[in-house]
Amino acid sequence: MAVIAKFENVTKSYHINEIQIPVLKNINFEIESEDMVAFVGPSGSGKTTILNLLGCLDKPEKGNIYIEKELINNYNKNTLADLRNQKIGFIFQSFNLIPVLSAYENVEFPLLLENIKNKKQREDMVREILRKVGIEQLKDRLPTHMSGGQQQRVAIARALVKKPIIILADEPTANLDSKTAGEILDLMRHMNESLKTTFVFSTHDPKIMSFAKRLVTLEDGNIVKDERK
Ligand code: ADP
Ligand code: MG
Image 1: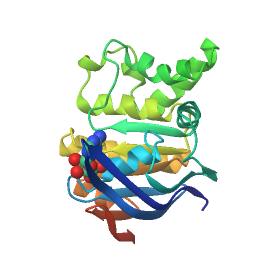
Image 2: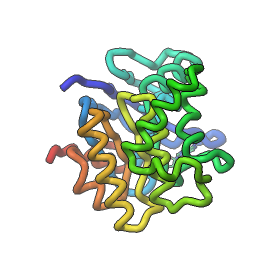
Image 3: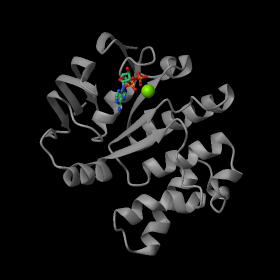
């Protein structure tokens, strides 16, 4: 398997007023393509910080971050945004759909940002992924008229529509009941297998932990366990 992301001695602190709060302390790991990796650990252990760094939303203080073979540390905002648009999809705990747009329009949105101007091409891409995540029949609904599970399916379709190499999912089941969470996980597993998309989760959910192929445990900004199942 190819390595599609790598952290090398990554350190990150936040600064509040004059006070430095160390959050990641010399973190090292590689993510292999087609894997399903879950970062677990108590609240405040640095899971979201790792996903933000992987997602090129933030920069490390020290150390190197590679996406595929590219060292991204010194990229400027625009280059990082391009990289993010081309290679990375995001799924959030609170779905983060645009409330005034239908399911279809939410999924189409990243294609508009990417300047895919051909309407028919966009339509083919959106319809294909809506069908794959099982919500083609809901395409005209607004998010407020959908259940949590349906909204998360739209969010998964939106994350996948541009065929990213990696999906970053920050506590994706935290706002779902247990049965729906199970269905959403089955869907992600299916997408992992059929589209070969790599998934990286942060989670507290024992279901995701038993589901992931690899578990990386964080404690106080350190990796204390890294196990493959
Ligand atoms: P987790 O996702 O595991 O709960 P986070 O990565 O969100 O942990 O946070 C790790 C630590 O960094 C926590 O102590 C949190 O309070 C702190 N932190 C996170 N984001 C910021 C920020 N933007 N400014 C200051 N401190 C932050
Ligand atoms: Mg978090």
